[in-house]
Image 1 (cartoon, rainbow, N blue to C red):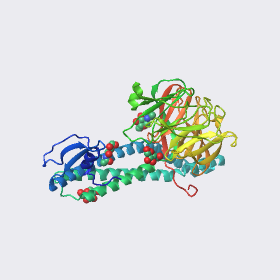
Image 2 (tube, protein in one colour; image 1 turned 90 degrees about the vertical axis):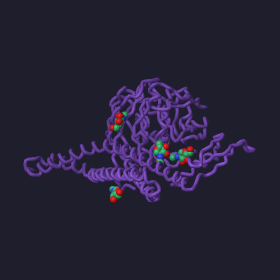
Image 3 (cartoon, protein in one colour; image 1 turned 180 degrees about the vertical axis):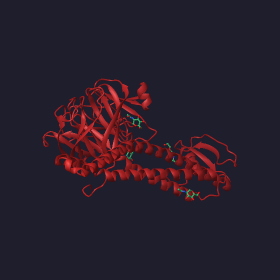
Image 4 (cartoon, rainbow, N blue to C red; image 1 turned 135 degrees about the vertical axis):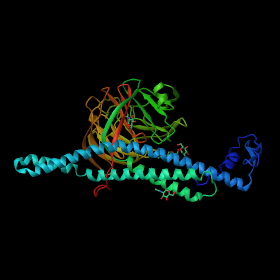
Length: 457
Ligand SMILES: *[C@@H]1O[C@H](CO)[C@@H](O)[C@H](O)[C@H]1NC(C)=O
Ligand SMILES: *[C@@H]1O[C@H](CO)[C@@H](O)[C@H](O)[C@H]1NC(C)=O
Ligand SMILES: *[C@@H]1O[C@H](CO)[C@@H](O)[C@H](O)[C@H]1NC(C)=O
Ligand SMILES: *[C@@H]1O[C@H](CO)[C@@H](O)[C@H](O)[C@H]1NC(C)=O
């Protein structure tokens, strides 16, 4: 968190950067900057004289106030986002709740005229009921969250009102107090949001077709760690024999084809399973098991490292082939590589990577054959694997790295254009990015909170 009262920043900015050749401001209006000259190193020097004391504090306070107002505005936006997300999930939960209520009623009815029902049917219903039992704490959690959000809203409204009323009587209010209220609200909001964003995949909706371009095989992505104002899109058409990455400033520019930059990578890539994470592109160097980290800002490779024992060059690709042996991805917990090894009999291996050095931090062996996997993506430390790249594909298997357990799943998604050569989760957008037969598509996901139980560390 920044220092609470950053109102003296103008002085700092002028002295450090000194870009203003000369400025004259009347003493009543604020800071005076008398002159600028160059020192031995060619830097500008400004002589700055502070304005009269009372004016200064008044100036500082109004600046603080403006900052607080901005902060409140930012938080309001965050709450709106939170609200949207929760509503989306909430609708799903409500449906489940109704189903459950219906089932309970049916259950009671059946229990009443039990004599007329065959024992087998009865048992079946009871099992279904048991299956739904774990949902109850989830539902309760959602109700608490909904209450929490409306409480936030109320507090924000209150705070905004206070700020507005004191705007005229600057100086008469305890800013320290106000500031701490804002900060505490901010941190509570953040912890609430982080709680809401992690969960178990329940449903995939869409896709929405963003654009139709390129060959049948390719990759496109945004950086989940970029700031909210930075919505750059990267586009890497084809799975082989290419090293050209196209960059767009925003989704709108991407749709209209207004490219902002082109990068020529030092090595060609293999497959379509690249990821952009915290300003770097991570990809598999062609015909090798080497992972490359390329910084867009510096325009050079910052790290490269062989992924030990990983099959490459169509030894263990996904079902569609295309040298998709090594899949790099990022989620809320960090960076991951998904691949297969002879040691694990061609089954999928998951490694968590250090995004700086590409060192393997930890590895998990699954029992799912890589060659029988359509695609895979990671959400909150759980790997989800689809069973095909063709029509009718679904998320078929999941592996939880926290518990080292697997589960068979049955989560369908609409493979609109019949051939899927890329599917990756972006936790900032809370969406799956797909390359669907020359169409760039987005899916929404519905996540459930993972409720802690005794066997969930
Ligand atoms: C509010 O958000 C904007 C844009 O995201 C950011 O530049 C600014 O620093 C934020 N203000 C505060 C006080 O957090
Ligand atoms: C709103 O502000 C008033 C004082 O202006 C205070 O009495 C009240 O408790 C506040 N409500 C909330 C929810 O913070
Ligand atoms: C992202 O990069 C910045 C430096 O550019 C670094 O300080 C920060 O720790 C990185 N974040 C993650 C999650 O790796
Ligand atoms: C995802 O959901 C949001 C909010 O409901 C909606 O605005 C957006 O269009 C959806 N996107 C996709 C790809 O379905």
